[in-house]
Structures are given as structure tokens and as C-alpha cells.
Image 1 (tube, rainbow, N blue to C red):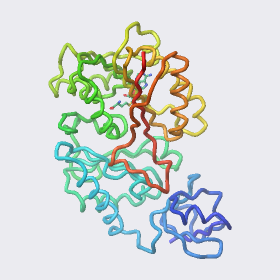
Image 2 (cartoon, rainbow, N blue to C red; image 1 turned 30 degrees about the horizontal axis):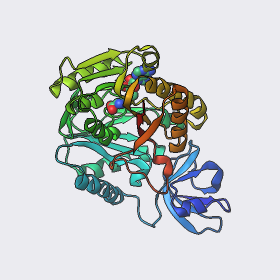
Image 3 (spheres, rainbow, N blue to C red; image 1 turned 135 degrees about the vertical axis):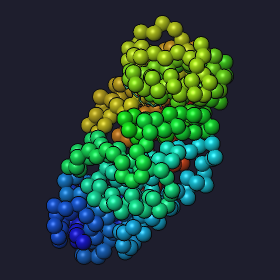
Length: 391
Ligand code: SAH
């Protein structure tokens, strides 16, 4: 096992429970510093602090797994996974069979995401250390939960920053079908876990979609960035008289069409539009009672935040302009780098420029299967506001 000694004064955040140790905090490494493996972390006086996974190529050099002297073995992962499952089992209802089983740092398993879609699990290993422990984790997963198959969708920016290649395919059991049927709050959706965005479905918006259905009755709704149409299904189920689903991706809209039909909403009340939401909102010459704005993350890194605020402001400004008096805007940002405060300021700027007076009816966020470690506030990425325009 690697032994890593921190510089003087750099131990406090780790002791307080932050799971990330940056390269600049390291004084000395005993062992092979080119291999991603389990490491013991000591302070500058050689006092043991924590045990975690070392990433030789990442700026975040260590992710802490435990502050106890426990073995990082199959039993360790079994305990963490069983704990994660217990929360979901207790709190999710029998009408939902798709949820995030493991939410990285929020479940004290940094670098690991596991989503459950009915009888299949989809995993993402985002760090070099977690990637190396894949066999152990897959084995523990199949012990806590009996499923037909475990599939991997490890790809994207986080992996390249760790110096590891994308990895996609079956880890255990059956290959999932092209589209997996799932239930969310009793609604049916088809999920493309092999090629869809993220692991196939935006599980993090479950509660916020349920909120939409409570305000939809008799309303004309515009669902911008609709992906596979989930907000649209809830809107129609809530009694909307019209729902427009807008997305730039043809495959997303095809799936949205399937999902609407599956729930009995192949109706004149529903329209699908392929287009750019920025252009549509600017040019559109009609108004809506409710608009949902759920753009992809516009800030992927800290340095993008300033440019991203311009994008968020543009979207919110033009959405607010298109609301009927008393109309509602459900506006979201899923960028970890844009704080809740800054998001609210951006939306305030948009309201001022749109010339509308606006109140916040409710703040929205992540559901219980996307927990945030109190010691790692960076894990809070999804923020939303329900806004009402005065007149
Ligand atoms: N609200 C969705 C998730 C949205 S994800 C849900 O609940 O499932 C973001 C979506 O925005 C993706 O489907 C992507 O195809 C779409 N998108 C990205 N850029 C876009 C643009 N400029 N205009 C319209 N849609 C866009």
C-alpha cells in the first residue's frame, strides 16, 4: 500500500472530512507513484489520517474512502453499497424502479456512479483508482442486489483528466436491451442505457417533474431541453392543455415520442419540435403559462462560469418574456461550478432586463437518491427555481 505524507498545515480539510486531496498538498510518497491504488494518508508528523485511492495523473491526487483503519476490500464495498441501497429502498415507492444507487462522494464512494434501471445496473468509474477496483465493486454490487446485468458507461471528460480511456460494455450478466422499460412515479419510460445521455435518463429531475404535474392543469407548457420527454409526460398527466417538447437532438425527440405514446399522450395536446432552444426562445411569437428550462451544463469547469452566466441569462430572459401574466418558470442549472447564489443573481438580472416582476415560489434541487456529502458541498450541482411573474 502507498504511504502519502501531507505538507504541514494541509491535513485540516482531510480531517474535517473533505474527500479530495490535491497534488499541491503532498509532501512525500512512499511506494510506486505511477500506479492508481489504495493509499494511506499521514500528516507531516506521520500521524495516520485516512485511507483513499491514489490517482497518479489527476490534479485531485487522492480521494478518501475512509477515516477508519479498515481494509478496502470486497466487504468494505459491500457495506457501503448496502448502506446506499438501504436509503433508496426505504424512501422510494413501489411505482419507481429507476434510481441512482450510488452517487459518488454523496455515498462516500468518490469516483463511482451506479444507476439502476429496473433489472439492470449502469456503472460509471470516473477515477483511475475506482477503475482498477472494478472487479471488486462489480462483485460486491451483485452481492447486494440481484439484477439481470451490469453495464458500464465510463466515458467523458473526467476520465481523460485521470488519464484513463473510455470503457463501455457488459461487466456482468446480460447485455441490456436497446431500450429498458422503467417506471418513475408510475409513468413508463424507455431508457437507452447504451447510447443515451449520461447513463440514459435524467434521474435527478424526478421530484421536480412531479412538482410540474401539480401546477400543469389547464396550462400551455413549453418544455425546453426536453430530452426523452419526461417533463412533458408529467405535464400532460397533470392536465396541461398543450405541451411543446423542444430539443436539438433528433434521437432524444424520437425517444420522447415513444415515451409520450407509452403513457397514452399521443395526442393533439403534445407537439415535438427539433430546434435550438436559444433561437426558439428569442424568435418565438407566442406566450406560455409554464416554461421549463433544463439546459445541459453550460459550465464544465470553473473557468467557464463567466461565459456560462451569459447563456443562462439569455435563456431566462427570453423565457420570462414569453410567460403569460401569473405564468411560471421552472428554471434549472446542473452546473456544479455555478453556485445557487450566482444562479439566483443571474436569473434576477434576466428578470430586470425582461422588465418583469418575479417571485420565487419554491427552490428545487436533487432528490434523495442524489445525496450530497456535507463535507463535499461541490456535490450539489442541480439547482432550480420555481418563479412566478406578476403581470
Ligand atoms: N429535461 C430533461 C433533461 C435535459 S438534458 C429530462 O428531464 O430528461 C439537456 C438536453 O438539452 C439534451 O437532450 C440535449 O439534446 C438538449 N440540448 C442541448 N443543447 C440544446 C440546444 N441548444 N437547444 C435545444 N436542446 C439542446
